Image 1 (spheres, rainbow, N blue to C red):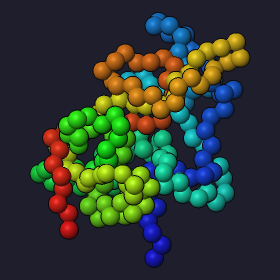
Image 2 (image 1 turned 120 degrees about the vertical axis):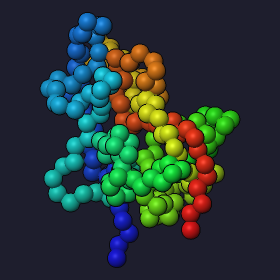
Image 3 (image 1 turned 90 degrees about the vertical axis):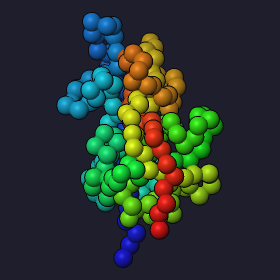
Image 4 (image 1 turned 45 degrees about the vertical axis):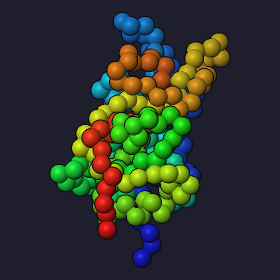
Length: 203
């Protein structure tokens, strides 16, 4: 039986939006980044514009285990779905299962109050994730039970408007929901802050 393909994994054939698809939308709060032709779901409930990824017809490309498809990552984080099978992630009295690793910007309390873009998992898929994720093979990590995975914010690319249209200025910028929405952010990932964390004991 072939190994399971993580639901959140991106594919080499995924295609992002062209600059020509981006436009300026004028609102009561001022101009903001928008698409020329809007679609339902372009923005989340906080008003953040999300990147569109097109999946062209034909056979899917190779699986990119070190990259996540923005729409599928967002769905898993919003609805607490397993990142491998896309079913509701299992929860016990100690909370949901997450895998997290120490980063340069991790809080001193890590893994408590760690901010992650990795969706939760089912217990049956933890070992699969540990084997397939390139980051986990070379970093200090932990399997966690999290009672309160609090929605924290989004990250993505900041754009600035120039005489030649929109130009990317900063990549992978984290923007908390506690701050005013950034009008020129194109979101690519949804993040949760892990609270009430315990290290999991799994067989």
